[in-house]
Image (cartoon, helix red, strand yellow):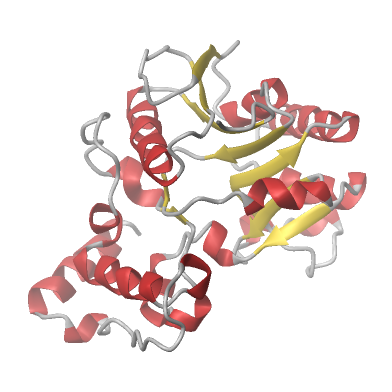
Length: 276
């Protein structure tokens, strides 16, 4: 029986994101069959993959803030809709014994994430808010309220800069998670050795630009990453000692794009051009 004070929360509006959330929740249900999984949405689905659904109070484009504020759990792991949970992650709740909030650092150093006017040391990282663990306290509730207020009033397209600034100003106890808990850049898998451990959560941002798929079918690594990277991750899992694997197992690396055949290379080139 799962702990009623611990749960996972998705927040999604619109057909594409709600469908992705339903598919993402199924990857979580496979990894953690008895998990508490709630959905906050503008259109209740009745999908049995969710333990409970909640109607959002308005159509703000960042529903995660309301979802975290209203979460019925004392300890919440907030997940974006474009993720795949690959293993059980009880440690995300356990770290909240010592910290109020936890999230993985983003890799991008683009100017949009680091506003010079904020006067924050560059060493304070941008946090990818697609996976956040948070413990309910008066301080974290105030943090979430102020985060939402600033994004709304400033008309920010991104929520990360305000989040980063509030970490600096409000000083909640915060843990920076390693990349495997929010692995967003698929190219990293091309240099991901077995000794780095099996990724726990994949965050595939371009999923919302693809056909949404069947909401009752879980997302797969093959669909999200392609067969070559998915095959490599299966090898990495077999070498992860924390999952019962053999740490002496050699995983190697997937072949680089230029060695994967002309059709694969042409497809990747076309995709990069279209995304510019």
